[in-house]
Figure 1 (tube, one colour):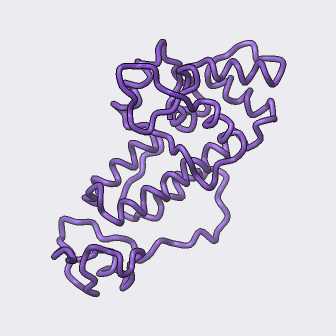
Figure 2 (figure 1 turned 90 degrees about the vertical axis):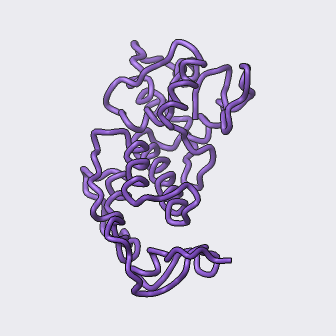
Length: 225
């Protein structure tokens, strides 16, 4: 039985991404509580070329007028703030749609920063640089091994590509940091390039701890998704 709540997307635009599968009522022109920010009239098509100073994240958040995106903060924490801004529950269809679009933006931003070719030493050198690995390894294998020996959060690689990403002392410290900050990187995504797929493939394995956290993958206890 449909919920008694009105679908805000349908009320604002006359259409709904989820169609007949939406659990909310489709009543066009229905009043939306003043405390709720009104959704944009449909997600804007990204027909314009991205400006040189525009990231995948700024493009994503531009689709939600009224939300003041702060690029100085972690993008994933800004997404959680967006959910609070729109008062989305975890099972809201609108949140699910936004979450998928955000995960796409996260993966695309990784590709934009580090490239997509797992056999390009320059891509590995970019990661080595933000991990403060000095001097840079001479060979592709050495660069890969250096990166994969670190306990780091992949979301941090995207959040701070020009700074210094923290390498944690232990897998448990990394796990605690990831859970506390909600910094989970999507395990699979259609936009993942070869470099990212290589990283995600290499870090898969079994967590050797008291319990295996949901969605956790590791390679010798190195990275955290």
